[in-house]
Image (tube, rainbow, N blue to C red; front, side):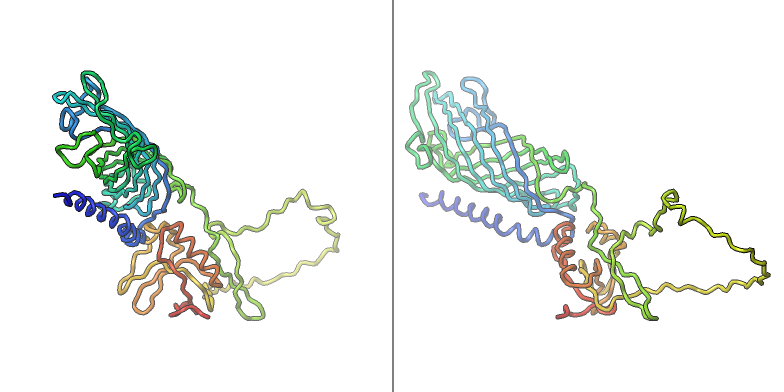
Length: 407
């Protein structure tokens, strides 16, 4: 029986460490490809109730508020790294107080604790439903582990005399506080106020690797305390989901230019959404010398026969560059994918996505660049801004994709 308690705790710790290390890689790789998600950091301030569950407690669950109040409070700060729509890693600092009363034993205790923990939040909503950048709420599960250091005084209920102390110079933590490991698990709700600010409601139980938090080593082998809090989070880093879209000036367009009866390609940038207009000329700025008209002798009128107009069919010639670089964002074997669907999930205008075939695959690319460096910049932009983590650069010659990039 002596080795049963450490064995159970070790197994639980191993499970939590496994989730912390393995889960983010699996979830971020499988989900980020189809979601317009930007990884971000958050800082959270929280405060709420801190309640004890153990030996010195009047009722099993409900706290008492008379004859030494068991309602106590705590507060803390938390730093969050949201890796994917489902998974986040969080580091939390927490300070709180605890108390318990047992009238038939004529005992009550008071304790204060300082807690550091590392936990993971797993979004239940985003597992069941597809993530939306502007979703109003989220529900998640909390799992983690940490360390708690505490000082405890046990007193007689009738005389208020101290009968036992835990910590207060006898422990191994700073200031002689007693230091113990703990596991935590709980639930949370998140409500979006704006692109940067969220409100949180969380409740989580802490299971300590000790029965001495209340100074009484009997009954259940592990003391438990609960922290239920309201918090406010501020997100920084990433990109605001409702921010105004910037025009992409990395795309280049080709205009045919005729020189010496040959057609060449001249590369230039322009905004294709606006028609080209001739320059405006202010008539007031033209000098009299420029607009003066010389007097010429009269010319006899000649009768000119009208020549009927000959209509010529005009054909639009699309010039394909001999060698160009593009960024491939998706491929599917056998059947095509709707460009409108790709536009929706990647947040890219439809007219910027091109469809080609290659070795039985339908491939979808963005942009047209004359060298690899320009295409690489666009690839990095799509990965960071549009969440297309597997975008890569490909080369086309005369409109056909090459199997590898030119040397």
